[in-house]
Length: 268
Ligand SMILES: [Mg+2]
Image 1: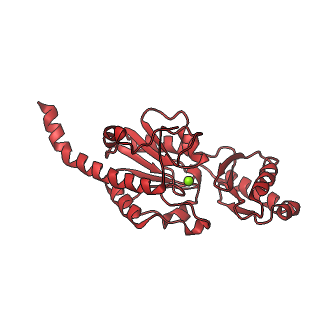
Image 2: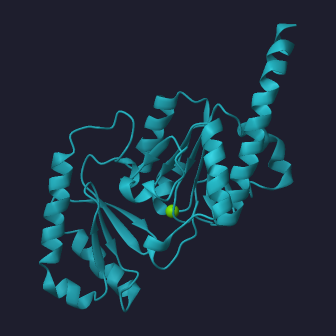
Image 3: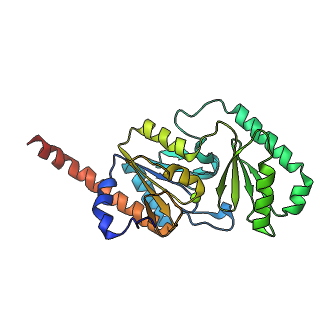
């Protein structure tokens, strides 16, 4: 079991980490906002919104989500400096590579899936969401979600070109060849911001790609206890992420105030 980040025994290390030179990166669903039945209704708590806005004025902050960047815009406070959608493929600094081929592949996959009448009869309630650069297959509303999941997965595995499949909460994300994952997105953000270290909090399989073999200067945190995570720490609930953001605001303000004193001290 990964240690609980908010345990007082880790407090000194945590407080040291929560500084203006740290890049703060958050997943959205299940991390900043609780998971809800209808993803369109997902919202962060007002207090979390306020504190995230404050943190965005003190340090570089990124939200990296499987949602489209357009969808994220209204769900995240304006002071967040990097809004990265589509699992790291929208809004990434320096990531404006030619996306036409990937968009074409997603459209092709979507048409092949939609024309498969037997699939939609068998997996009734399943939905396709074409996010442009990735395709999502939702099975939350299937009459039998486990059955819907296996049918969709089997069908997706026969698509050409073969997609990279990343699981989420009652969803499969299909990524065309050459698509970024959150791992590459986080590496690109670290290069771009030139931060000394990162705090990254997520809750999902897509986040595990960034937790695994993370460099020493990435503090990785999973929301929710799990025996099967590569994150270094966990917090128990979305509410604790809200507390952590408020605490980070306090630590960054203190670091700003103390900077002059520390620099003077170093001169002696
Ligand atoms: Mg999530």
